[in-house]
Length: 338
Image (cartoon, rainbow, N blue to C red; front, top):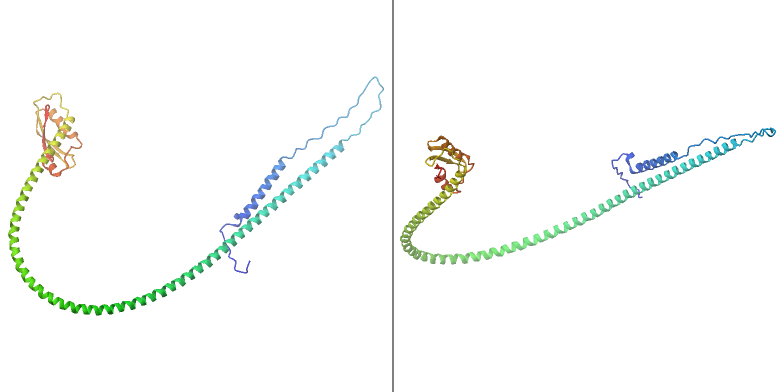
């Protein structure tokens, strides 16, 4: 690596949380678990078998001298102890071998991780340097291009200014010639127009007199047609309003007929007249008994029917509503509703 200032890249992670430290701790934990499992599987030492010494006594034969058999128990104990020591030594060697292997693996992985980290840092550094070089080249190229474009714009601007001034000079000369010719033509045209205007004034005066007479006659005719049209429209509107009123009066009578429950004491001769006032929304504003039937129960049933309707059917036309449905009277009779 060249002798340059090295940039220390800090990730903001504590050293004990770095990938290398975590990797080493993980491998040590694996080694500890393996050793613990091996120690749990060691066989439990069994007690040595007991040796029994016996003698056979026969009464028919003479009692021989006792024969003492040699006891080989110490040799077996020594062999067993030696075997156990050998197994322990082998197990200890195997444990140390595994620990050393695990340590080597952990160190190797830590070294590989450190090498990868350094390689990644170097790669990022080289990429950053390459980007800086490319950006510097791009800025320099952009600067040169901007300068060239600025010089070209200045040249074009100077050329356009020269052409503009030349064009203005030619236009000024042409305009001067045109104005002189225009003054001569205007003078001749003025004299000609004055003569034409005098004749036109005389002609217009006559036409205005005739038009005034014709306009008066036309206005009188239009006024008469307008009056007739208004009268026809009023008649059509009145007929439409009457038709609408009859339609909605029928709907109101039908709704009230469905909501009215006359008392059992009602007779066909009883008639109650009520005055109903509605809002433009069709809601009931008030109801008043104008003419009683002479039977309080009959009158109250009619009032209840009127008040039971939440909204009355009314036409959309406001003028029709104001004329026929803002306030109207209705008669309640067992034979009919009017």
